Image 1 (cartoon, rainbow, N blue to C red):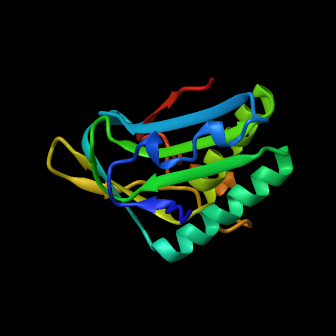
Image 2: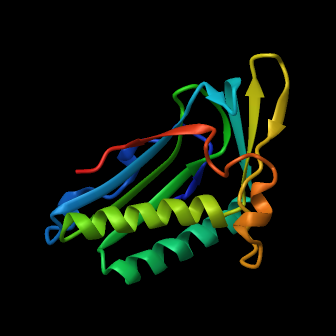
Length: 167
C-alpha cells in the first residue's frame, strides 16, 4: 500500500493499516495533535503548515523504519497535514502497533518527537488580530543546540494541543 505521510486533506485514523493485520500485536500507541486556539498569550484562529513533500515523505519514512527497528514494533506510521487548519483540526497522527503497551507508547512518542524536530514542516499561525507569523521550530541540523534555539522565547511545537489516545 502506498501510504502518503504528507497530506493536504483532513487526517483520519482510517488511512492506517488495521490492527487486525497484526495479530501478534496487543498494544496500540497513538497520538493526535490538534490545533488549539492560543499560543504564547495570543489568540490563534488558524494554522497553515507547508512542506516540500518529497523530502518530508522520505524523512518520515526513515524515522518510521528507525523507530520500528529500535523498539522491535511491527508497525509505525506518521501522517502530517499541510495546508490551512482551523481550531480543532488534526495536524499530525501517529500510530505504533506492538506486542506490548510499553513498546507501543515509546515508539509512538519517539516517532512524533522526531518528526516534529527533524522533518522540515513549517507552521504559520494566524492570529485573531489579523496578523500572522511563522512559529520558530526546531532546526533540522543536528549541530544546532536547544540552548541556541531557546533565545526566541518560543517552544517548538506548542501552538497546537496534543491529545493522547493510547490503548
